[in-house]
Every structure is written in C-alpha cells, then in structure tokens.
Length: 253
Image (cartoon, rainbow, N blue to C red):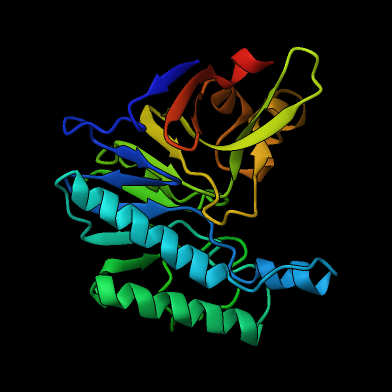
C-alpha cells in the first residue's frame, strides 16, 4: 500500500483526485459521482433516525473541493454529475426540493450551461427541465453514468472514460479479520484502449460496493465494464488526509 500525494495532485497530471471527485485541470472540469438525492428520506421512512441534512452536506463538500482546486492554482469552469443524481425512481416532492436547493447553490458558482447533468439508471424523472444528457464529451474525455453503452464513447478521439454507477469501495481488515473498515475508492484502469476512471459515490452515507468481492460477486450485466477489466483496475482508497494506492483489484483476492 503506497500513499499518494493527495491523489496525484500534480500540475503535470491530466486529472487530480480531490476527496470524492476527480478534477481535470486543463479543461477546468470537476466530475462528481452519484448523489442519490432523496436516499436520506428513504432511510428515514424505513425507521432509521437521521437528521435531514443531505443537501447541506453535499453543498458543504462541493464548496470545500472548489476551495482546494483554487488553492492549487486552478479554476473549476464546469461541473459534471455522473448520473443517479436522484434516488427515487418516481416523483418525490421532498427529493425535488433537495434537487432544486443543490442546483440553486451551483448556479452561484457556475453558469447554467456549465452544470452538466448525466442521466443515470435512477434518473427516471428529469427535474432539470430535460437538460440531462446520456453522456458528455469534452477535450477527449467522455463522462457518463456507466449502466448503458453508447457508440460515441468509443470514438477514437476519446482517450478517457469517466463514470460512476459502481459506488466502489475497499474493505480493510486486520490479520484476524476481526476489525473491518470500508473506504470509498477510485478505480483506475484501461477499457477499449482508453483510460478508465470510476468515481465513488459522493453521498457520504452510501459506503459503496466492496471491490474485495468482485472476484466472486461481480456480474458483467451490471455495468458497461466487464469483470476482466474491473479485476485489473488500480484501487485508490480515500483516507482522511491522503489517498492510498492499494494496487490492483485482483491483488486483494
């Protein structure tokens, strides 16, 4: 396990891992994974006692990331949400209010055209006024959710694919397998001869799917990326102050 310098924070890098997001300095694009707005209400309805602060926490996290980008001498010009922005498959008025509150905040930081919303498998209702896209391509980087494939993402001009959907995490345990802890993580690999970056869920409560279990439980139909590719991805686990390189997924199994 090697400690990374805050997720490749290097001016020569094409991308930088910052907390749970990935930033592209050249284009100024910040990409954020699944928000699942409304998930908190689902838990409350199921009987779990939680404060209703999902929107507040998401806004706070984005503000902190934007400050970190600025502190490194960069500027975030666009923000891309990689699908599953909402959680309920149908309409929910509380979820809509959270969605509107987050968008209101984003419009204080970005022009409306620079807030890119990708459609995920949970985004059956488009609260954005039909602005959601199946994918977004900019300067050789294709952003999409990852549950559906589109011919355009494999174009020769695309050199990097960035997706969410998988909610990757990694489970760390002691030698006796008594103490276990799960960390969100990025996956970095190669898919169709293109760099592949899989971003973790942005919502803190959703820990994610442990990559430790991919060898036995991964099913190719769940994502556009097959098991063979997933097993060869590099794991970058998100710690409190650092991002750690855990090597390849197949090395954990």
